[in-house]
Structures are given as structure tokens and as C-alpha cells.
Length: 460
Figure 1 (cartoon, one colour):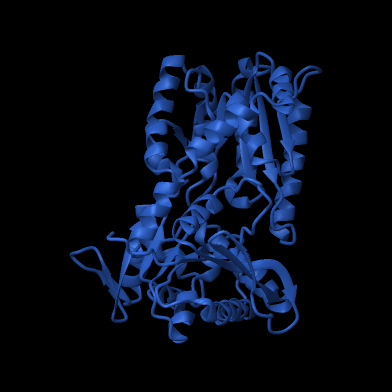
Figure 2: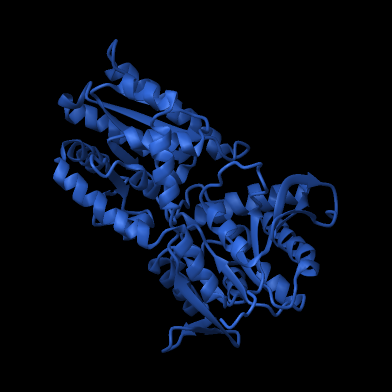
């Protein structure tokens, strides 16, 4: 590189993982923080507080060569932007959940205004050589707003959730404007190749752009790169946390309580896209169809609360509570409770320990961009005696883990039940071979490889 100083990286997301006094970061934060440490830069986004009217200038806290810049959002606009458009329209649309999709033009206006605020507050913080990396569906219009403000620096966008095919996308009033906004980025990244094809199909359908022979896309007189960048996990950290946590009092207590039975574990945000009611029904079907599994399996489902102000999420919580009570009432015995349902968050380190002692990881979203829980479960296993991953074929992770996981359709409760039984009966040699295959994939495309690939595509 001839001594060239790396240009700063500016990461932009709805929320900022601000300095947390030494707590370990999880998921997305690991990759972003590593990229920022490498070149220095800024993480910009909402700080978690609302205000009335125009927000104040960003509050900036510095740690080493990283600045954490946070802004407030007007309370009235936040509700329309976040609860209304992001979580009432875009989230269900992108996850193919049209039954709960809702649209209100006022919410779309709030979404645009909040993106304008982001652009207005970010613009003065930018330097000439910066590269800007925008994350997720909350901020799709941001590049367009920045371009209109005169920003010419490279801007990349990564969508962490699925991107729907055009027949689904066109359900959204204003879908053309959404596609129009995305072509203002220089790099548009998705989790899978299918997501890329869905996006390109949308561009073709509205006459916005086409992919050229060199793979680049020309739209509105601009050239952009569209590519799959499947996100990974920090494999080494997951392994280390699992080995350390398995010795903790809480994990040892769970292991003693399970005894000779086999633990099936699911860990998800409490979200309708995760397929939790269907998962409970599949476990009930297992108990119905295979009485020999009684007293042999224990299903632990951890569902951390999320978006508690949205009615759909309140309804799914009540549904799961009723389902767990029904199944336990039907099948439990004095010394065996088939389902243990926990509706609260747990530390990542603790979960790694639970993964380590589990025999089966049950990850069955109805639709998911990637699903890092699936990858963390695999990374946390003991290679000498690994557990088995039962994975939805509708999760992005299924593309990478198809050779090692038992793939299922989450809507097929009999199919999931039979896969659980098969997972419980797999011999050691096959479990080891499947685990080894998945670990090769995880090591080759961990969180650091993911962020390096995207940052290099953006020009650095």
C-alpha cells in the first residue's frame, strides 16, 4: 500500500452500539467495531432518546480512533418512522408476511423525514476521503438524501434482512421510490444471491437498471455493484465463550437438571418471523407421533422481548404462553416438563454455554436474512461430541450450512418433528462429519471476513 493512510470509515445504523464499559459486543457490532478500529472513523445513528422538534447536533463520544455520534429523533416522527413504516410496513413486507403488512402514507412521510434528519446531521461530520457504510432497511433513502446534499464520497448499503421478489415488493405503495433510492449507493450488499436477484428483478420490472457483462449495474446514469455478502459470526469468540461458560454455575445446574435427557434449544427474538408458534406445534407433533421421545427430550425456548409496543408482538407472546401451557399440561409428568419457555433476554456468554450442552439446535424461522443463532450454535459445540442443527430452509444460513444441518420447511410440523427425532438418533461419526463441514464454512466466512469483503468492495 506504499504507506497510504486508510481513509476513515463512517458506519451508519438506526442504533449505535455506544461504548459499554467493556461488555462484549455481539452480532453486527463485532464486525463494525473491528472495521472502525482498523481505519478509524465514526459510528453514527440514533442514541435511543426522542425529543420535540429539530434534534440538537450529534453528541460524540470518542474511544481511541473511533467516534460514537448519536442524535435524538423527534418523538412524533419516530413513532411513524420506526413503529409505523419500518416495523409495520418494511419488516413484514421483506419477510413475506403480507398478512400483517400495513401501510399509512403518514408513516412513509415520517420515514423520509427521519432519513433527512440523519443526512442533515451527518453531512457536517464528513471528511473528503471518507467511505460511508449504511446498514439496514431503516435507512434505505439515506444515500439519496446525502447525494442531494452534495456528498460524493463512496456510500455502501448492506441489508441484513431478506429482499423480496417483485411480486411481493410491489405490494408497497412507493416501491419504485424505494428502488430508486437504492441505486444512489455505490455498493448494495445482500445476505444471499437470491436477494441480489430479487433486487435486480425489481430494477428491471420498473425500468431502472440492468446488470452489464462485467457484473456491475447501470441505473440512472450511475454504476453500482450488487453482491451477496453473507454475514458470519466471531467463531473464535463463540468457541471461547462456550468453553468458559459451560463451567458456570447456571450452565452446570441446567446440565444436572437435564441429566441423561437430550436438550433441544431455540434462541430467538420474540418476533413473528421466527416461526415460534409453528415450532411449538412441531414439538407437540413429535410427542404425539413418537411416544418413545417422552422423557427423553427437553425443549428450552428462550425468546427475548422486542418491539413490545407493537400489537403483533404482544399477541405472539400470549400465543406462546398458551401453547407452552397446553403442551406441558398434555404431556408433562411429575419429573419431566417437555417445554421450558423463557420470555426474557440472557447474556450472550450464558447462551453460548447453553448451546454447548444442547444436543439439538432448533432454528426454524419462517423467513430470515441470515440467522446468526444457527451459526453460533454450531460454533459453540464440542467437536468431539457435537450437537445437531435443525435449520429452516427459508433462512439465509441454509445456503451455507446445507451440507451439515438437517434442513426443514418450518410450515411442515411433521417434517420438523421427524427431523428432531432423526437429530436425536444420529450416530457420533455422522454428527462429527456434519459439524466439521459447517465449521469449515464458518471459519472461512466469519464476521471479520464479511466486513473485510464489504469494505474492500467500497474502496478500502
